[in-house]
Image (cartoon, rainbow over all chains, first blue to last red; front, side, top):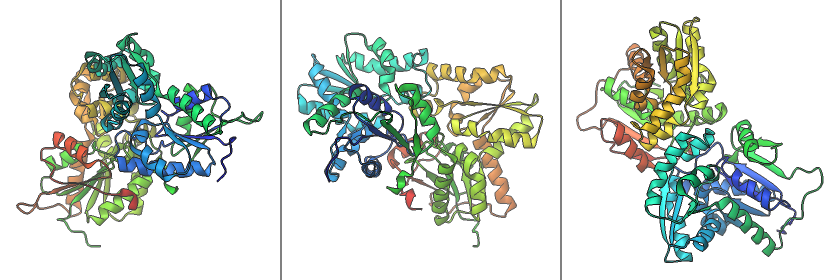
Length: 273
Length: 273
């Protein structure tokens, strides 16, 4: 199959969270088109098993291939942790996740070799960040903390709120006590809580946003493979959005965080793929 | 099909929440056996569409029928709101939900005809409680409030906690201002927050626990149809538990809230039904 450099990038997540990754691609690679899929019928992935996440990821990649994408970004930490290795072996298309780019930057930034990682129960429990980081630098010690209330707090819109401050203070206490100097925001919703986390962790701790690092990594990958896009035709809207359920609510959330208005959101039956 | 009065009751929910309903059946109808199904692979239902919830409910009922149950309890408010009418028409087995029993008691208890209902976005948005209550007593005014943080707070185990107090105070303020004298705990997790809700609403407000009312309604239905069980054989464990994902975590939660230890939890592929 000849890959077309003008083809779009496929980006997928369990729901709306991956839009923070799509947003960084839009900002940093403005010549790229995007086909986004949010698995809103089966969200959240964080509490599901590895086997289930691999099955879901396969279905979504088959759907994105039908959309003729030139590369795929797994914009979901849980799916990156559980399914990336499996699907990379199975599909003949460049696939990147959000864990490796974040881990690389964390390994480069830490001075005291103590790195914190926050995310869902699934992501943190997988130990995948520790694995990457140890591989990059065996001297690094990784401290993980699952923060299950962060996603519903973001979706409730309580971004700057005393309740969120208190929940965050409680979750992050452990990592402060461990004196981490670098903290990976290991769930796509968490960059939206960046200022709360910054306030608690202080200016001395480097906050790594894997969404941003993934966009840069994608840019490098496309250049390397001669696949970088050259922009879109005038009047052509470069972003398409698909979901597995409740397209209207997705659109509302998307419009609240993206720099563009979402023109079209289509619901598809992902179980068919 | 001849229905056997010694057959078990089928009880299902999107996950672990329906165990509060199973618990009330165990307490109030000790002669009944139970087959419980928790759809942990596809939880939560609260944010999914009506169409999706009906499809899921159909699959689960087909599974429970294979387990030879004599009646089914839809122990999930969202599924009761969205799917009960549809599945009652399709299946030849008595099916009850958790909404009607709660609404009946609320209508009988209210003196000022102002009833509050709290639940997921899906349950509250469906307006189904208002529909039932208005049908029972057209003078009743219903005030709904979605409380999306309650389920993750319960699952985090923060049942008696200042954060939960503050979140509850904020969610319930609106219903206090409306001077409801009766409040339906319209999500199966919420009875576990009963003491927090009691503290905020005060002793003057009647809290309706649909799990308890549903167990009583089930008892009446079984008597009426000559289907009441006569107890179990000695040494026979009367409760079986099935889930669609992560059976071990389910077992841990079940053991924390049930009066019996869960002996067997089996994972099944619900998409096959």
